[in-house]
Length: 269
Image (cartoon, rainbow, N blue to C red; front, side, top):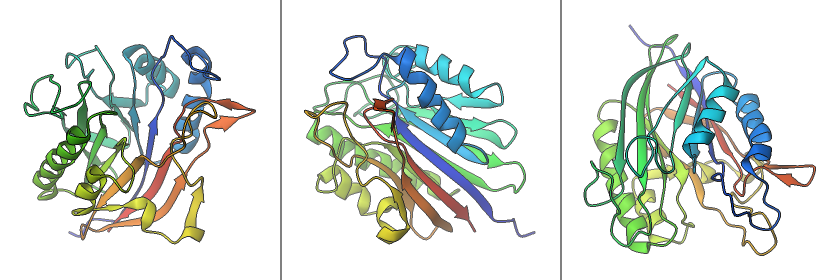
């Protein structure tokens, strides 16, 4: 029996961790969480998978409460594999998706245990879920990560590791990679990924891309805007990109993150 096509959305956002030592124009999480969660809810209506970065445990609980009981998530804290440190969680609606597989790998030479890799400053992880869509029976895999902000070697080696992990899964299901890569399109980490994957931000003509041109805005004029958040798609796996957008993160002169959400609509044929 031929399976039906599956249309779904991927929403990716670095929400900014719950920083207690604020930078200029930055707001506390207790203020930022309301518009941050509202953006997730508004843009996450049907068949949506929400991938987040820089999420501390208290923020995770706030987001779970804000989204409601119909949502579930997978993710662990990068410091201890439980609740300590930042999460890279993946949220999905329990009525739409069945969780088939979930795992976390550390971006290091010892990916199965909490560890710092290569020249990185901090522990870094990639979260993975395989989901089955109840209505169509189709399965997809989603990787979500946050690369190190200092280690050039760490970012490049992280790309190599993730490509290896993705190829193992692509033998069974089409997969998507999301995250804050702390890398521009000129960096080796980006170029390593682009050998095997497609950058969704380049697949549609400019007139079909919605919103902003950069994903990192910062909170003030001293922050240099950049394009470092990406949603990557596999080649020749039946995934068709329908829409692409870099969404707003500022309303009424108030930024709820120093990054903007990236959002794509996909069709699995």
